[in-house]
Amino acid sequence: MIGRRMFIVGVAGGALASTLTAQAQEAGRIYRVGLLAPGSRTTSDIGMAKVLASNLREMGYVEGRNLVLEPRFGEDQSDRLPGLARELAQRKPDVIVSIGTSATKASTLATATVPIVFLTNTDPVAAGLVPSLAQPGGNVTGILIAPEGTLAAKKLELLIEVVPKAKRIGVLAPDDPVGFSLQRAEIQKAAAALGVELIVVTVRHGDYAGAFAAIDTARPAALFVGAHSLFLRDRRQIIALAARYRLPAVYEWPQHVKDGGLMSYGASDTETYRRVSVYVDRILKGARPSDLPIEQPSKLMLVINFATAKALGITIPQELRLRADEVVQ
Image 1 (cartoon, rainbow, N blue to C red):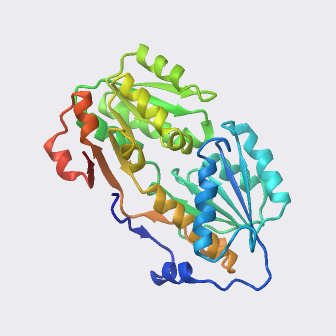
Image 2 (cartoon, rainbow, N blue to C red; image 1 turned 60 degrees about the horizontal axis):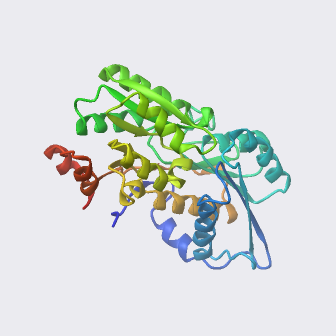
């Protein structure tokens, strides 16, 4: 079971508890919440809408009674997001939840007045989403999965600790140039410093089998899986292919390791989703996005699956075993 995560928050610690127990919304009001995600409604990306609805229900917002949830999905095509964002903005929701950098950029271009709460693993200042973490200003705030940047360099270092002789590493990249650009730059910089060659393959139109076959032709010693909501959604397929090609892989979310991946380093996806819901609740109660600092995780988890390591014939170094926050047997 994943341990308790702690987050740096821009409000007093008691705010979460009071938010979760609040039941009295403005009498007779119907709250409209938009959701913009890059994936498909026919897959588990619809799960994000269900998680959001479930979390909001705990806070007193119930679909069919006082909540209308309007999800829009890019169907794995990032160029569709701007049009979907404009469509949502025209419906004048009380708040838009955007998943990932590309969806958030599309939302900020679509409206300067509708509050936006994002969830991203890319530095929002570097991406041009907000001027600062402490004072986001304007109509945008949100939850940052990785503290001030991405975790790409650290994950590459961890992967090399597990496979020290690796000189060539495959990189599974999403078909999202905007959302993946900072991660790509960071891992390339780290690879150059470590003397590692990267084989970057982009997954196009959900063709994971083709992407893995392309990576395999280069005979890499390990695999770096980019941190992207599409790869969290499609984790079981990715994990199965990594096992098939016997590639030790590093991921960002603990859920990957629970489902059979080798190793992850990052925050809890469950807790980050809950924090998004808390910010939505605060805005629906009258808070301004400009007054809600961007939240960052203060606790990142190193999770290792020893059963997967054994299946791959890998011995996890003792130092790394001691540093692990959780192990899956």
